[in-house]
Length: 254
Ligand code: ZN
Image 1 (cartoon, rainbow, N blue to C red):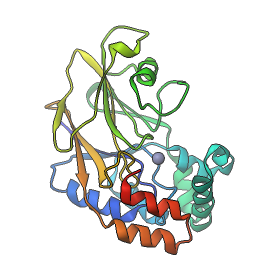
Image 2: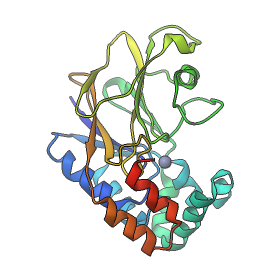
Image 3: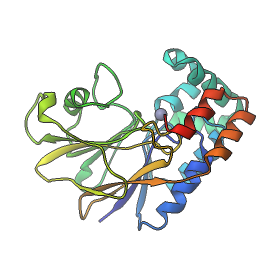
């Protein structure tokens, strides 16, 4: 039986990542899964990549990881995000760029490969952000396993769908906004899309770093929030010459 720590959207925020790794060591975690966006936005991309590779057994590539390797992908990003992509590309050496380039887009894990991992959306949905029931209903069409783990929205969330019905509509989906430290028990007659929230740039108005633990024995998905030194992360962002908005938003979790 496994207890997976699920981390996502670290975005070069070393202070947040270190706080999450420290908290994780108290949670009897057996494996670490990273759902991508290790870099982009924050001032410590190389350090975050090294730590993530050191501690994770499974890593998938996020859109910021991809854009750092192939800046044409940053064309769709907003100004601050694009600026951070070029900054990140400048500070990373060839080994780090190669490591990001080698990351797979999807991964499977768990007993019988029951867990599918992807950074954003498992299906060609109108937006790659699986943030509401309507998009989740479409996203489930890309999942053949009981559980899909994804990030990208920077908001912890669980979507539950009936096992067999396809295609799904929004009213068939139940959405949970997980309270931190409260177990959500995944039923074995339903399918799930679970998002652990963001380690390095939460956007649910809670500035604490977010990650989750999924326990295959109890079938519980639990979101954890961890305080970290936001002021230090902001100062490092400013010192790196990254856009001010990227420092400001850390304090308000937006
Ligand atoms: Zn992200």
